[in-house]
Image (cartoon, rainbow, N blue to C red; front, side, top):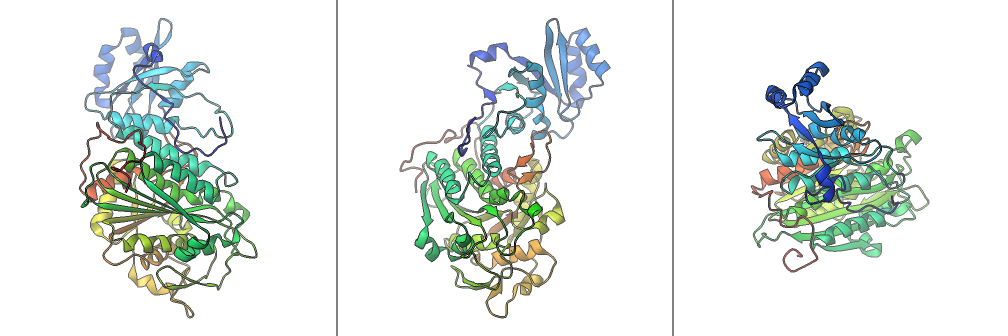
Length: 497
């Protein structure tokens, strides 16, 4: 247990087959409802009778221990008819209860045709524990890693990274600490990284500097660039931008005490974009990658921005501050302007931006905005296939003049108390260069309660949808059995831009 900033934990819930502990592993058989009869036929008569008497139907996530001469002999896991990673999400906890306080070792037997990467991902999502400040109350099981490609592991590690950062309290994770955590991750894969602060930040990203002016912890912007080992000069350029507000008081437009309780998660967009960047680098996708994270704290002091202040942005547009609690769009707008001026093939940003998106879609569905129908469709379809749905909302141009100001080019909030997620996205669109294909994800970044594979706390909602959507939209084919950069590398001429 450590209270240092977790930057990239190993998946300690998995055992390699060569580990000596694997020799004592018991077997848990995954089964779909239409395969239950054949599984029963392979069991001993006593075990088959036990399964029938227990009412086991192989429903999704259903787990049944099977008795043997010396106690628990093996187990059955139901996959249901739909499957997906969360069918495996309860395994680590459920099988862990068979250990009597120790971490029991299990081996997973999959039906023919089932995807081992999905199983690895689901097991690891359920095995996650935030252990920075206390030992876990329960001991999850260990799984002998099945023969799978790198994708399941790397999506799990990326998710653990995002969850750890979001769960970290703001007194330990300030703007500089967030940037340094991102730097640690990026340099492991050979990325070229810089952190902009001080006068240079004020000159290059004036709105980021304005949001952070009220905090004693100075704001900064992390910039990272990376190139896949198979990416030539004409390789697609993917640009990622994340809102990293480590804590949001609301500024002078102060939040209520209840409204501040979860504001350590206001850097969830930055955590998601860092996790996505990590997955791209770990899987060594054949593209060029840029990452920008605005790392800042929105506090109240004599130096904080005020309602009615007017800011000059990197794009040259003037913005009247109608509400200091609408700071996320100010963090993003200068970063989007710079990123889009590079004319990337695809520009993505993510942020815990509006409560309006949660009112519309609830906590589990990130709101997706895109200026390209094919791009939106790629993310929506990928999200459904990966059990990580996103839901498109419109960039409705009819509401654009709701952002008008009598003293500046635009206001940072709408003049109407409606469609808050839409108008926030329209504000961001003002700073995206023409003809750049762009998508914005307004995410909750949190699980309000624990479910199999989705423990209460920080969450990388949309990670798998974005990753697979990128592959679809940019027509990138990958060999998940040969992820050329899975364990990271030292910087070198091949993957450092």
